[in-house]
Image (cartoon, rainbow, N blue to C red; front, side):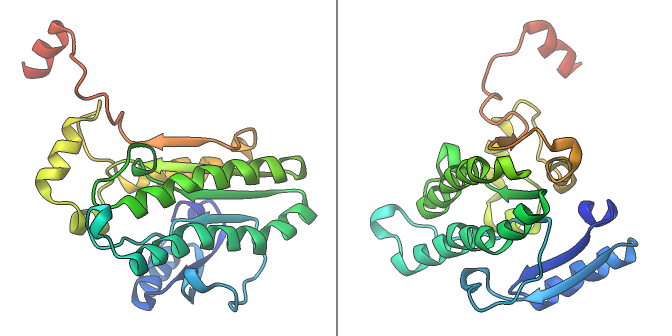
Length: 232
């Protein structure tokens, strides 16, 4: 939505047609332009895609929650294909056109789990961590051609997926371990994506930038005066 509001003609890729159409309608209602394309990002080889100046890769999937010794290898391969293989394929498809134009932006959506791990979701965490290497490799390969590549690492964001996948008590524990003491909003992630996709973000590349409210800092003790102010 943020890119559409900024004037980008958006192509939406995904497997769920109803969600794509809903996103398309929301963008059009806001005065933007969007085209839905139903496809599986894990199997992009035979999908025809028009050239693009900005590519945002946010697709992800989860394997069933389980410790590593009881995890499902087929489900893990699906996580790898959707997150890492799709990212590589998107780069192969769109990078030549960006090079030819002398301008391009790749923005990958990672996760705090890629840096901190995720018990029961080792495949998901491992794939998000792999995006760090992919982003930095693309940044080095394409930077001299005017193409930047960055990773946005959200923490706990209030989305339909997190509400479905993360139990309320786990969410409260995560919030309690953040400096800001609250859940993040989707538009706060979108604002960073918009910056990285713009000319204003042209000197940022190869970066993994957290949008997590200071995750891991919430357990640090605060000065007594601040505690009194917070509880007054």
